[in-house]
Structure formats: C-alpha cells, structure tokens
Image (cartoon, rainbow, N blue to C red; front, top):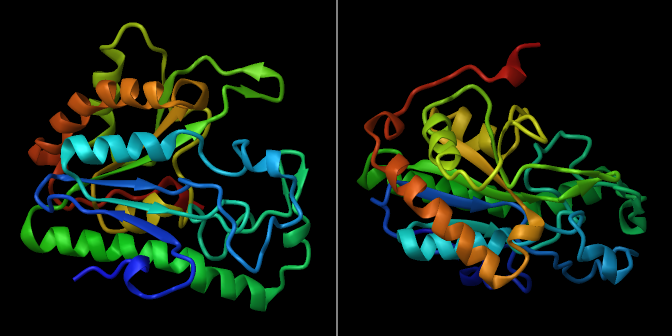
Amino acid sequence: MIETAAETGRAFQPTEYVKGDFTSGLLLLCDHARNTVPEPYGDLGVPAEQFERHIGYDIGARAVTLELAKRLNAPACLTTYSRLLIDPNRGDDDPTLIMRLSDGAVVPGNAKVDTKERAIRIDRFHKPYHDLIDQTLDAMMEVSEPPVIVSIHSFTPVWRGVPRPWHVTVLWDSDPRAVQPMLEGLRAQEDIVVGDNEPYDGALKNDTMYRHATRRGVAHALLELRQDLIADAAGAVDWADRLEPVLRKIAGMSDCRRIQHFKSRSDAA
C-alpha cells in the first residue's frame, strides 16, 4: 500500500497523490505544483507577489497534470510546497537545492540555512516526494510493464526581456524512446512551436528524472509548457487536449515499456 502524506498525520502534507490505473502505462509527475510555504517558515521574508511568479512554482503545471491524470486514468505524484522552500527537482547535494536569490528576488528565510536546517527540509519535504514516486513506480512495476514517466513543468514566456518563441518543449538526457514520438506528435500540430531541450538542457545529475527514470532504465520525458498558455483553466484543458493523444500513443509503445539503461550525459565528466 502506498502511504501518502495525507495518511501519515503530518500537519503539513508535502505531497499530493492522484490514484490511477497501475496498468495505464504512464506515471505523471509535477515537481513544482504549488507555491505554499508551511509553518513555521511563514513567507520566508519574500513579498506575496513573488510567490505568484515562476520562482514560486510552475504556473499552470498542476492543472494540466490533474487534467491528464483524470483523462488517462494515470497515477500522479505532485508536491504541495513552493520551490523557494526547497526544490524537489534537485539532488540532495545540489547547491541550488535551497535558493538564497532567485531571478532577482532575495529570499531572507534561506539566508542562514545551515547543514542542520538543510537536512530538516530534505527530510520533511524533499524526501517524502521522492519516496512517493519510488513507491508508486514499484507498485506499478509489480502488476505491469514499467510505465513511461512524464514530468510536467512550465516556463516563463519572457526571460530577461527576451521573449521565448516556444509553446512547448521536451527536455531529455540520453534516452530517446519516449522523447522522439513525443516530439513527432507535438510537431504534427502545425500551430505550435516545439522546442527540443530548450530553454534548458534535460541532463541534470540527480534531478527527479535522473533519480527515478534514468537510473532505473525507465523511459521518460520532461514537458515544459509556456506559462501564459496554461495560466487559466481553459488553457490547461486546451493543452490536455493536445497532449492526451500523444501520451496515449507513447504508453502503448512496447519499446517504451521495458527497462533499458542509457548513460546520462551528466555522468560524462
């Protein structure tokens, strides 16, 4: 049985779990789903409006993830805390795990984070999310072939004054199995601009995909959607419409439903 935060009696629940069919062929993730900061951290000394920006969470990503989980009857694992508290998409040893400065915004509540406080945040917030993913993936693999892991993120439409042209991008490391059909399915929609490993590179040592997919040989892809396109309910539904058939096809591909290891580009050094 998978234990979620809601079942442990914690005052703050660091994870959100959506039940789904373990044979669906898909496991959905949303690392930066919300912008909540639990007690006793208050607002981390950051003005409220900063939490509404991309530095606080991935705008619209949760809504798209929940809509896809419902349509595809796929399990989904999401966080419930702001990435300003701790970033679940970073390894335990990553220097950007707890940010003191994020896109120009100073985070006073993180200024004096020491080794002890870092360990506390990992134990209370970071670890439960990754434990939930591991438990869900293990449970799915007990009853069916390995699922494809799809992580839903969003990116700001303008960065440092420069507009970003993409509507959606696919980030990946070295495993092309789910990525190539995903790119093909998205590029077949001629009214959108699709990026490949833009505006970020998908190879990041010990991030969520490395930890749960690359390391375990599970096919995967990270989707980045432009935030202005999914900031409201209508936008989330529109993008679920676009993504649903693409993900259904990938979930049915035998090559994507087996263990195969690909060396990470982040291990090259």
